[in-house]
Length: 556
View (cartoon, rainbow, N blue to C red):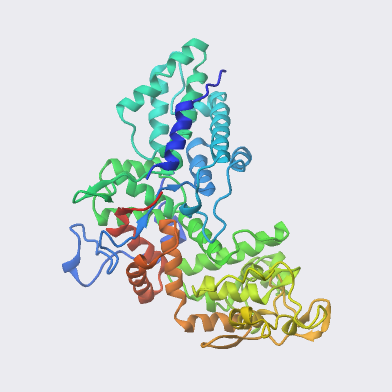
């Protein structure tokens, strides 16, 4: 088979850089339990189809500016796995050729998605390799294209495959003119006497199309304002799918858009309800929590890391299913397997993995999970400063200025000498430029010192048995606590968790950090969330809101 270099497709990628599976049955997935049906006592505000718009964030211009977003590696992986029937063994080495996604909180921050030569080269290699692999496997090609070619000149099958794949990869129907262009590639197949030549060209061209790699939201200008647009049904569906599933929309979802089912907020809400009943929605929300709290990647042995991640995923799942989000922080039990039973020294009932009650006050809630505590791993031990910073900034959304340029944070503190106890080594009172921040974050972190780098219990400092750990900490101006369970309860009492979660949900939704323009919608989201502590319900209302269907154009 001859492969053809697609210079026009590569150009499309460059231009894109600068341009300003079926939903599961709700009865089969636990995310569907306890779902809101959108009813409200006030029927006067109902849409024609019975859906009640969300209060406070349903104005079309409620969202701040949003720039052009490139698909993250996770979004590429999920989409390509669905559309091209690929797997990790084939796909992950190709994705590794692409530049890393944002490492600051969420991976979809478009402000750092700058065009680069590695991006161009990596996407070219990915597209070429996948196209060639699929085109040379007759059975896979027939499955992906939706037809088996009768011979090198089967233009109808080439058109069918291009139309099917174009709809899924570009997330909209192809125009007849576009289909004609792809069908014309059959001339190359005839010249080579090999249908696979044209099939590979179609695949490679679509994978390098700027509309695949970037989430293009052209929309229709509102009242003649080119910088404020209303998304069409396919653009809206793509927003929904990337937020709820972390991938492009499936064939079945696109069929709903074709049928006009997204033309009303009520229709959008019903489709979103079906989507959150799918396992992909649960995985996406678990992934969002993992990035938010810093345990998306754990620097631990694989088996322990997998068990710790599973423990926290189970807790997040239960809170989402029960529509009781704050319960994560006050839970009196946790999910353990044999690995974690040994790690935490907590026996499994009947020796089986499952929910286990904490045996004493040493543990409780999310804050005692090794996955969350690993955020403070530093210098082969724990860093009270890192742990305190995680609580103060990630969970309470409080700002902490960066350390002075003259301070080297890459060396362990030794305020009273390297052999002194940690409370003395971390004493920053004599360093005026550091003291104000460390008074806040260190006080929180020292309340978690009874937990080792991966959450294992200890009563004294490692390699320093004479340094007993008191286990007492303090959130300034809020209160004192002793241990992870008490910290979780104190965090709930602050009343700041809900607002911080909404800041993170909004940032994950729009692909950038909130700014002052976003304060009104953040306040509205927080009020809605505080009403019933139902994160899934807020996500559904957000997706069905008029704000979600509009875009104020931001810098690309």
